[in-house]
Image (cartoon, rainbow, N blue to C red; front, top):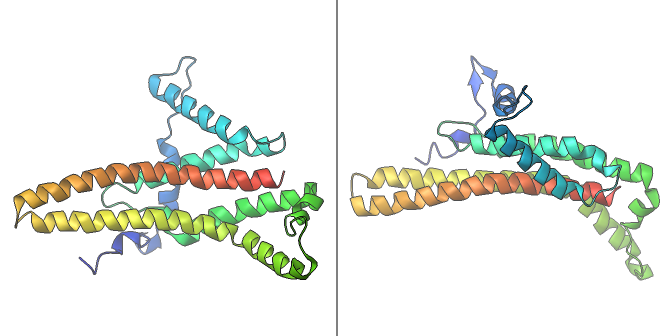
Length: 226
Protein backbone atom coordinates (compact mmCIF):
# COMPACT_ATOMS: atom_id res chain seq x y z
CA UNK A 1 0.00 0.00 0.00
CA UNK A 2 2.91 2.32 0.75
CA UNK A 3 4.32 1.87 -2.75
CA UNK A 4 1.12 3.11 -4.37
CA UNK A 5 0.39 5.86 -1.85
CA UNK A 6 1.27 8.64 -4.30
CA UNK A 7 0.33 6.79 -7.48
CA UNK A 8 -2.94 8.74 -7.81
CA UNK A 9 -0.98 12.00 -7.99
CA UNK A 10 1.08 10.97 -11.02
CA UNK A 11 -0.07 12.73 -14.17
CA UNK A 12 -1.73 10.11 -16.43
CA UNK A 13 -0.64 9.41 -19.97
CA UNK A 14 -2.37 7.95 -23.04
CA UNK A 15 -0.05 6.12 -25.42
CA UNK A 16 2.86 7.94 -23.84
CA UNK A 17 1.24 11.36 -24.29
CA UNK A 18 0.20 13.46 -21.27
CA UNK A 19 -3.55 13.37 -20.70
CA UNK A 20 -3.62 16.21 -18.16
CA UNK A 21 -4.80 18.71 -20.78
CA UNK A 22 -7.82 16.58 -21.67
CA UNK A 23 -8.64 16.14 -17.98
CA UNK A 24 -8.43 19.90 -17.39
CA UNK A 25 -10.75 20.55 -20.35
CA UNK A 26 -13.30 17.96 -19.18
CA UNK A 27 -14.97 19.79 -16.18
CA UNK A 28 -16.41 22.67 -18.28
CA UNK A 29 -18.29 20.10 -20.35
CA UNK A 30 -20.27 19.10 -17.25
CA UNK A 31 -21.72 22.59 -16.75
CA UNK A 32 -25.25 22.45 -18.21
CA UNK A 33 -26.51 25.20 -20.47
CA UNK A 34 -29.99 25.96 -21.73
CA UNK A 35 -31.22 27.29 -25.06
CA UNK A 36 -34.79 27.63 -23.87
CA UNK A 37 -36.59 30.63 -22.43
CA UNK A 38 -37.67 28.73 -19.31
CA UNK A 39 -34.87 26.87 -17.53
CA UNK A 40 -35.18 23.65 -15.60
CA UNK A 41 -34.50 23.34 -11.87
CA UNK A 42 -30.86 22.34 -12.29
CA UNK A 43 -29.92 25.34 -14.42
CA UNK A 44 -32.00 27.67 -12.24
CA UNK A 45 -30.16 26.44 -9.13
CA UNK A 46 -26.83 26.77 -10.93
CA UNK A 47 -27.58 30.35 -11.98
CA UNK A 48 -28.73 31.22 -8.45
CA UNK A 49 -25.48 29.90 -6.96
CA UNK A 50 -23.39 31.78 -9.53
CA UNK A 51 -25.24 35.04 -8.85
CA UNK A 52 -24.94 34.56 -5.08
CA UNK A 53 -21.20 33.87 -5.26
CA UNK A 54 -20.58 36.67 -7.73
CA UNK A 55 -22.53 39.16 -5.63
CA UNK A 56 -20.65 38.21 -2.47
CA UNK A 57 -17.22 38.57 -4.10
CA UNK A 58 -17.94 41.67 -6.21
CA UNK A 59 -19.71 43.78 -3.55
CA UNK A 60 -16.45 45.28 -2.25
CA UNK A 61 -15.08 46.11 -5.72
CA UNK A 62 -15.34 49.31 -7.70
CA UNK A 63 -16.25 49.48 -11.37
CA UNK A 64 -12.76 48.53 -12.54
CA UNK A 65 -12.59 45.56 -10.21
CA UNK A 66 -15.99 44.25 -11.32
CA UNK A 67 -14.65 43.74 -14.82
CA UNK A 68 -12.98 40.62 -13.38
CA UNK A 69 -16.30 39.10 -12.31
CA UNK A 70 -16.56 36.67 -15.24
CA UNK A 71 -12.99 35.48 -14.73
CA UNK A 72 -13.44 34.96 -10.99
CA UNK A 73 -16.74 33.09 -11.40
CA UNK A 74 -15.18 30.88 -14.07
CA UNK A 75 -12.22 30.26 -11.77
CA UNK A 76 -14.30 29.12 -8.79
CA UNK A 77 -16.46 26.86 -10.98
CA UNK A 78 -13.40 25.29 -12.59
CA UNK A 79 -11.59 24.62 -9.30
CA UNK A 80 -14.75 23.31 -7.59
CA UNK A 81 -15.65 20.90 -10.41
CA UNK A 82 -12.04 19.72 -10.72
CA UNK A 83 -11.80 19.06 -6.98
CA UNK A 84 -15.12 17.20 -6.90
CA UNK A 85 -14.26 15.04 -9.92
CA UNK A 86 -10.99 14.14 -8.22
CA UNK A 87 -12.93 12.44 -5.42
CA UNK A 88 -14.20 9.78 -7.83
CA UNK A 89 -12.37 6.43 -7.70
CA UNK A 90 -9.44 5.97 -10.11
CA UNK A 91 -9.55 9.63 -11.14
CA UNK A 92 -6.84 12.27 -11.39
CA UNK A 93 -7.08 15.62 -9.61
CA UNK A 94 -5.14 18.36 -11.46
CA UNK A 95 -5.32 20.67 -8.42
CA UNK A 96 -2.97 18.31 -6.51
CA UNK A 97 -0.21 19.46 -8.87
CA UNK A 98 1.65 22.50 -7.57
CA UNK A 99 2.69 23.46 -11.10
CA UNK A 100 -0.92 23.79 -12.24
CA UNK A 101 -1.94 25.79 -9.18
CA UNK A 102 1.00 28.12 -9.71
CA UNK A 103 -0.05 28.48 -13.34
CA UNK A 104 -3.43 29.73 -12.09
CA UNK A 105 -2.16 31.85 -9.19
CA UNK A 106 0.78 33.71 -10.74
CA UNK A 107 -1.01 35.28 -13.77
CA UNK A 108 -4.02 36.36 -11.67
CA UNK A 109 -1.81 37.80 -8.94
CA UNK A 110 0.47 39.50 -11.46
CA UNK A 111 -2.51 40.99 -13.31
CA UNK A 112 -3.89 42.45 -10.08
CA UNK A 113 -0.51 43.87 -9.01
CA UNK A 114 0.21 45.36 -12.44
CA UNK A 115 -3.23 46.94 -12.48
CA UNK A 116 -2.49 48.48 -9.08
CA UNK A 117 0.83 49.94 -10.23
CA UNK A 118 -0.79 51.33 -13.39
CA UNK A 119 -3.84 52.94 -11.79
CA UNK A 120 -2.77 53.72 -8.20
CA UNK A 121 0.99 53.72 -8.10
CA UNK A 122 1.17 55.86 -4.93
CA UNK A 123 -1.14 53.55 -3.00
CA UNK A 124 0.68 50.49 -4.34
CA UNK A 125 4.05 51.84 -3.21
CA UNK A 126 2.56 52.90 0.14
CA UNK A 127 1.95 49.23 1.01
CA UNK A 128 5.72 48.72 1.16
CA UNK A 129 6.13 51.26 3.96
CA UNK A 130 3.45 51.65 6.67
CA UNK A 131 2.82 55.16 7.89
CA UNK A 132 4.78 56.23 10.97
CA UNK A 133 7.59 53.72 10.50
CA UNK A 134 10.80 54.70 12.36
CA UNK A 135 13.61 55.67 10.01
CA UNK A 136 16.04 52.89 11.05
CA UNK A 137 13.40 50.23 10.30
CA UNK A 138 12.54 51.49 6.80
CA UNK A 139 14.97 49.25 4.82
CA UNK A 140 13.98 46.15 6.79
CA UNK A 141 10.24 46.79 6.41
CA UNK A 142 10.57 47.43 2.67
CA UNK A 143 12.34 44.09 2.26
CA UNK A 144 9.74 42.27 4.41
CA UNK A 145 6.79 43.81 2.55
CA UNK A 146 8.39 43.02 -0.81
CA UNK A 147 8.88 39.38 0.19
CA UNK A 148 5.31 39.17 1.52
CA UNK A 149 4.03 40.53 -1.80
CA UNK A 150 6.07 38.12 -3.91
CA UNK A 151 5.10 35.12 -1.79
CA UNK A 152 1.34 35.64 -2.26
CA UNK A 153 0.96 33.47 -5.40
CA UNK A 154 3.07 30.74 -3.84
CA UNK A 155 0.86 30.79 -0.73
CA UNK A 156 -2.25 30.53 -2.92
CA UNK A 157 -0.92 27.53 -4.82
CA UNK A 158 0.57 25.71 -1.82
CA UNK A 159 -2.62 26.14 0.23
CA UNK A 160 -4.79 24.56 -2.47
CA UNK A 161 -2.29 21.79 -3.22
CA UNK A 162 -1.73 20.88 0.43
CA UNK A 163 -5.40 20.74 1.38
CA UNK A 164 -6.47 18.63 -1.61
CA UNK A 165 -3.44 16.32 -1.39
CA UNK A 166 -3.80 15.76 2.37
CA UNK A 167 -7.46 14.82 2.00
CA UNK A 168 -6.73 12.36 -0.80
CA UNK A 169 -3.92 10.73 1.15
CA UNK A 170 -6.09 10.37 4.25
CA UNK A 171 -8.91 8.80 2.24
CA UNK A 172 -6.42 6.44 0.60
CA UNK A 173 -5.01 5.33 3.95
CA UNK A 174 -8.39 4.84 5.62
CA UNK A 175 -9.74 3.05 2.55
CA UNK A 176 -6.74 0.69 2.62
CA UNK A 177 -7.25 0.09 6.34
CA UNK A 178 -10.94 -0.71 5.75
CA UNK A 179 -10.04 -3.23 3.07
CA UNK A 180 -7.36 -4.84 5.24
CA UNK A 181 -9.62 -5.08 8.31
CA UNK A 182 -12.53 -6.57 6.37
CA UNK A 183 -11.03 -10.06 6.62
CA UNK A 184 -9.93 -9.69 10.26
CA UNK A 185 -12.55 -7.92 12.36
CA UNK A 186 -15.99 -7.01 11.04
CA UNK A 187 -17.02 -4.56 13.84
CA UNK A 188 -13.78 -2.63 13.44
CA UNK A 189 -14.31 -2.60 9.68
CA UNK A 190 -17.75 -1.03 10.10
CA UNK A 191 -16.34 1.65 12.38
CA UNK A 192 -13.52 2.49 9.96
CA UNK A 193 -15.94 2.45 7.02
CA UNK A 194 -18.19 4.92 8.86
CA UNK A 195 -15.17 7.16 9.40
CA UNK A 196 -14.39 6.88 5.68
CA UNK A 197 -17.93 7.99 4.75
CA UNK A 198 -17.71 10.96 7.13
CA UNK A 199 -14.29 11.84 5.72
CA UNK A 200 -15.66 11.71 2.17
CA UNK A 201 -18.41 14.15 3.15
CA UNK A 202 -15.76 16.37 4.73
CA UNK A 203 -13.64 16.21 1.58
CA UNK A 204 -16.61 17.30 -0.55
CA UNK A 205 -16.95 20.33 1.71
CA UNK A 206 -13.18 20.96 1.57
CA UNK A 207 -13.22 20.77 -2.24
CA UNK A 208 -15.86 23.51 -2.41
CA UNK A 209 -14.35 25.60 0.39
CA UNK A 210 -10.87 25.57 -1.13
CA UNK A 211 -12.26 26.70 -4.48
CA UNK A 212 -14.03 29.57 -2.71
CA UNK A 213 -10.96 30.49 -0.61
CA UNK A 214 -8.64 30.52 -3.65
CA UNK A 215 -11.00 32.76 -5.61
CA UNK A 216 -11.74 34.99 -2.61
CA UNK A 217 -8.04 35.63 -1.98
CA UNK A 218 -7.53 36.53 -5.64
CA UNK A 219 -10.50 38.87 -5.28
CA UNK A 220 -8.92 40.46 -2.18
CA UNK A 221 -5.62 40.97 -4.02
CA UNK A 222 -7.60 42.63 -6.78
CA UNK A 223 -9.44 44.82 -4.29
CA UNK A 224 -6.14 46.01 -2.78
CA UNK A 225 -4.92 47.12 -6.22
CA UNK A 226 -8.03 48.81 -7.67
